Amino acid sequence: MTLDVGVIGVGMIGQEHIRRLDGGTGGSRVVAVADADTDRAAAVAGGLPTAKALPSGEDLIAWDAVDAVVVTSWGPTHEPYVLAAVAAGKPVFCEKPLAITQEACGRIVDAEVAAGRRLVQVGFNRRYDPAHRALKQALDGGAIGAPLLVHCAHRNASSPPHYTRDMSIADTAIHEIDELRWLLGQEIAAVQVLTPRRSSRGGKLQDPLLVLFEMADGVLVDVEVSVNIHYGYEIRCEISGETGTVELADPAPVTIRRDGAAAGLVPADWRERFALSYDIELREWADTAAAGRQPLGPGAWDGFIAQVVSDAALQSLHAGGRVAIALPDRPDLYAGPAGP
Ligand code: ISE
Image (cartoon, rainbow, N blue to C red):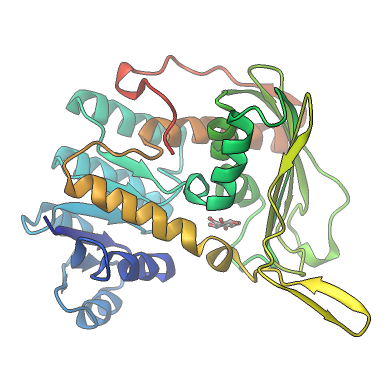
């Protein structure tokens, strides 16, 4: 079966996902697009062999020709579109964050529980990055014994003009929040955000940040969040265990030796570093949806928990101090092992 997909939001990541989903080796195609910028939606549709531009996201979700929905629109619009897709009984892939408040995420969880089946997948793509999967495989395989400490760095070369202080947590570190739950198989019990000396390159931003997470089993995690580090885009993660350490290898595919130096290339941005993870993520999502199966990846509950932890981190950023995190019981609909 060919999965006919509708994409809401045809900005940069939306157009990238369209290229991943339309034709190619997979069994999906894009038959509808919608965007607040209707001219841009028409232009994108015009460049696709089988796509129409619909007047709104709601119209796209309601159109019978759309089997499944991708939401890559502006964050505050995620909730209504995801709720509409769930109400329509259509699988929906929503780029992170699931919604911009934990209350909105909770409404999506409630809607899925009421529907009695999982339809929502959230775009926490690191679970699909081969390097992160190898990291988890080594840890789960007992290569270093029980994990004790984790050291992470999330480094952007620069931040866009619309980037705010809170986005360092809600838009950037939210990846580590989901990744740690998946990697360690534990919930985050507390968080504290420390504010070191500011980079002169960060303008009014508090940049960098140091985020300290306490996992439920006692593992401690430190995450450097630097969003104007200039040299490139780099994601680091090292796990220190009872008998050794395991860490993400340097991303450089090559090392250049010249002028008395040896240097590995560093990706310019997250699109370059994680292109393959997005390919794997969208392909698995589309194949699973086409087969009529529930999504295997991070779902609405993961999106909700990430938002709860993100809000706690923001509380620490704003008011200082350690913030304990109390999580509600997980609905039975979301029981079972964390996704890939
Ligand atoms: C962006 O939205 C992402 O998802 C990237 O992975 C992250 O590194 C970047 O900081 C975010 O703005």
